[in-house]
Length: 316
Image (cartoon, rainbow, N blue to C red; front, side, top):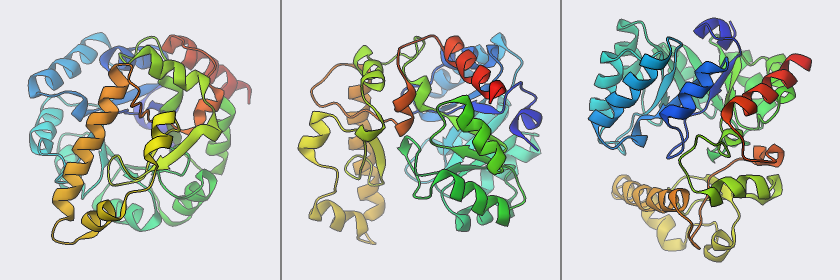
């Protein structure tokens, strides 16, 4: 079953949850224009802010939208965030990192669907066995935390070995890209990078303009920000600090006694740096994006971005 049928929307597209970028204005615009959207729960610092965001979107539209939930120990707010998502009955939950069993079990009691981020077959089969409703197949073209397998190869691998729908994530910039992914067996796509340079995003103009000015060749992976590979724009600052963890960073990150705490520290420090770059101009610019920036040529309203994308999809 395709994503549009699963969720009752016009097009099989999720505006991907983007750390520090996704907001209520963006989700409402997505719902108004035939797709769905999701935002990271961690984009809201307090439970009150998270509740207010969900209620604002629900008051605007009865279309389903989702929230991305980090389910491992790096997210100390996990339990309270899950309680809120279930109480307010969001349309679906996207899980990232860790074991999603509790989310799946409790969400299904409320009739809420759970889509799980996966980067390989092993983890995909684990979450399928736990009862996930769909797989978010994060491939090597994704922005932010990317996988290692090419889009077509990952879709094919999961389709051949799993029975639940596969939603591709990474490398979708044009309608023809979605059409190709659907022909490979995807049920739909989670699309992020092309929505960064939108009027509705509350990020710096410099970040949006960088999405326009840089191209696919300027996307690199760095392990210095979060302990895991992160795809970012290769700005002069990124070039100056390098993209590989130092020996001491690697050693601490791989020590079995310390790595849990070190990962939390590295993630906090790295994400704080990403946050500073997203919200204001700085010479220390670390801007997350995927190679889909190749096809972003201007800063536009979300309605225009979706309209262009869906017309291309229908024509492909």
